[in-house]
Length: 185
Image 1 (cartoon, one colour):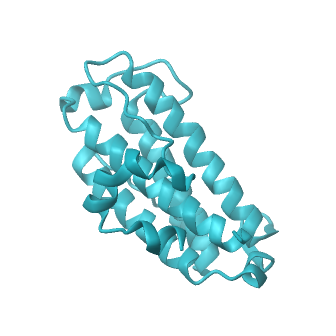
Image 2 (image 1 turned 90 degrees about the vertical axis):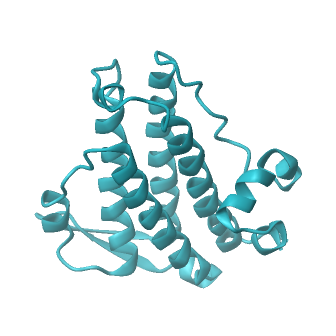
């Protein structure tokens, strides 16, 4: 039976796989295309992907109990290139996966403190993770749409949550060093 903690672990890996595919597809973009003005909430691929990265840093930091998150958020320096962004996002994704790998069902109910500067927000770990995964998916969807206006075909990003999709992700699983049995039990 799939537990909440197990589902959240799978979602952390789904996030990593989606970023892996998205960044891999974007390697064909010229640097100017990465920074070109586009129609979306954030006005470029670079700005949108950097927004994902900084928000990930905040929430993953909160899950880990990192200190002074508002200062970390304010000090964020956006990645200037896709290579730099992909490297930093990979490290962030791996930090999230590592945290989720130790998550238990009891840990899903643990309170996470998020320093907002003027107050401390407290929510359960499972709610923080659900919010983070929705945020990532929301903005990756915007990047996906922006790619439609380039020569890069937007990649498939949603073939990870169901075990029956295994044949559709097998190459990515090998590239990421993952095995189906380790992820799905």
